[in-house]
Length: 345
Ligand SMILES: Cc1ncc(COP(=O)(O)O)c(C=O)c1O
Image (cartoon, rainbow, N blue to C red; front, side, top):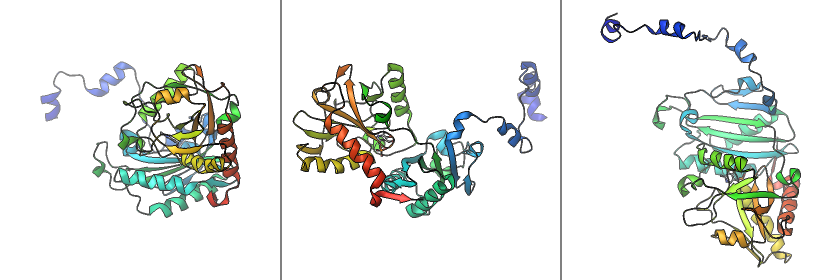
């Protein structure tokens, strides 16, 4: 009462103001929460198959229950790391490469999951088994964890782990056999320290995707302040030069894409067969990109995409080129049959 008298004297008490505004805000409590949730079902949630949450200590199969606490620093500060992989024929493809990158990303932001990579792998495979789909995408997020709404990572007593299984996207060339259209992004390229860590702070990537949608193209690609090719919103870019070199940017400034690394390995067979002169990671200028005989976009969901048009100008003869097509075939085969890289669940 003393506080009211000294600070709010003459001010309308808050509960009066609310009713005067006619908001009538409903109070949701543990008694009516589930009933409220039930009314929130949306058709797109049918694509969400399972979510493990270390906060809950188990897996949920009902999309309505796939929730992250608002005070997890993942939510309000983007303080966490993640990785996404795909499952084909009831096996996760290249899972360890994704989990190794996840662990490296976590270490880069001083985040450690106490059970280490082995426990994350076991929980991931168990979540996939519970989702019970032969084909799906998997996403693992290591978060700073609940603890406060502050920015200090030290306010979260323990990290949290969230693992999702959801419907897989269709590889790009299956939907668009004619190839992709690409423009140069206006979004500044991330500094190397952040670009090389798969952290949950993806605002620049979101803005790049928005550019692509708004400009009516399939992808945009960033070039850094020195005019060197970087990467796309969630994909790596490379070129095939007219002299037959397959080039991807040096990995100091882009994410070390698992698809890009695998494609470079598979491309060795094309070098042996004489279809390529050589393969290398090196600086690619915009002039190199404009003069290329092929431009490629690679990523976990996409596989290998051939670009048919860059900045409104045809790449090569404006159709998917032989190297892109061959690499896409090799990768699709690798995903389906390479038992050394397939982890069954
Ligand atoms: C920024 C960025 N670059 C490249 C990639 C491609 O990586 P991967 O081939 O491992 O999917 C991704 C994947 O999401 C990404 O987010």
